[in-house]
Image (cartoon, rainbow, N blue to C red; front, side, top):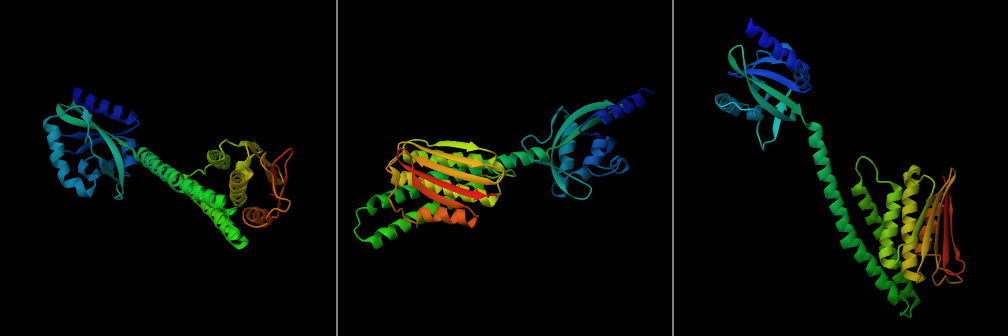
Length: 327
């Protein structure tokens, strides 16, 4: 009678556990299995009870499992199974999944048995793999930024510095085209970094714009002020991409041409329009600013979206760029 009570009590305790629980005898035969175990291994209670526990072990390690189980039976202790190993379970359909297993020796009905608690750790493993991937992406993005973008920008600044020393207008125009091409390369690399940094959730547009302002501050000698009005993260992606490119190019122009000590970028998003205004207190613009190169690119981006881009004198000094597109 006592033996029967012990077995029934063990069954009740196993059924109440949230993890998959099985009672295994010294021969490796499953005597009891709770509902969590049948769900985890996709097998009915009738399929599990009376079967060898080895059936729940992947085929490629099944042959050695019996010896390991016997070793535990000879010297039973309460401990995790397979310390330091990546353990897997195998469902009835043959699919595998990572598990953690804890073993506890008990004496029921006068016989030595083992309670095996099995936990599916697929979510945890996926999270760890995801974190490792994000760390790698962050490192790659940082390397591209520090080793490539900064050098390209510095090269563009060096080329721009010698433009005024060249007498030939054709050569000056050619050098300006080269610097514009470097600007576009930087923009594309920056976009690649943002793509690398994306997980399932896209990095916010506000964060991207703030990063651009911080980066340009390294070359300006000061960090421009960034003011955002409205909900930018709701912008369509094709508009956001052009806004990013325009802010990048406009601040690059300030760094190269303005000799400014202050700059401010104001981005406003309303129900029907998004606008970007970049102001500086630098030397100002020529009476007839070039309509090619960087300015041409910004005008083209606005026109492609049905908007406009204008550059004008700022008060009391400097330059003011206004870029507007409808939504």
